[in-house]
Image (cartoon, rainbow, N blue to C red; front, side, top):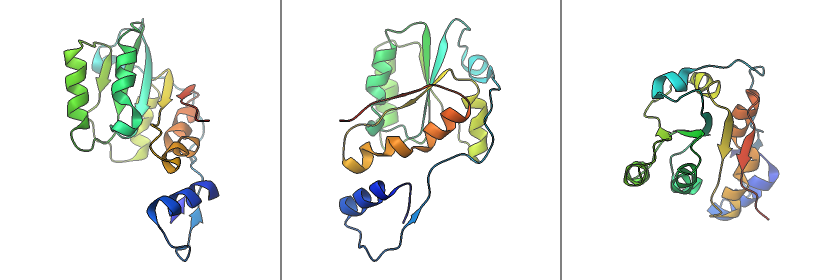
Length: 169
C-alpha cells in the first residue's frame, strides 16, 4: 500500500478491510519540478474564454464525488468567471454533467476531452488558470481526508494558484 499519511493509511485499511500484514509506504504528494509563475493563454484560446473572465480549474476525476454538477450550477451565476474541468470520467457522470450544462444553458463551464499522457502535460492547463478547485463529497472518512493530501493541490500551489476547498468538521 502506497499512501500519503498514517491517518489515510488507517482509514483506508479500515474502509477496505485490509490486513495490517500488508506493508505500507508513506509517500506525501508533492511535485518534483520547481515552482513557476509562468502564465499561458492556452485555455482562453482553445475555448474562446474572454480575458474579462477569470478561470477556475478542477483537475482530477469527472465524478460525482467531486460535486461537479453542484459546482457547475454555482458557476452559472458567476459570469465573470469560467470553470474548466479536466480529468478521467467514469460511468455516465460526464454525460449527465454535460446534459445538465446544456439544459441549464450554462455558457461559462467547459469540460475537457483531452487525454494527457504525462503529468507534465498538465502544466499548460495549470498556467492558464487563476484558481484551483479541490472539492470532495463527504462519502467516507477516507475520501474526505483526500483533500489534505491531494496531488491536484500540489499542482495548483506549484503554479501559485489559490485553492478553493471544502472544510469538514
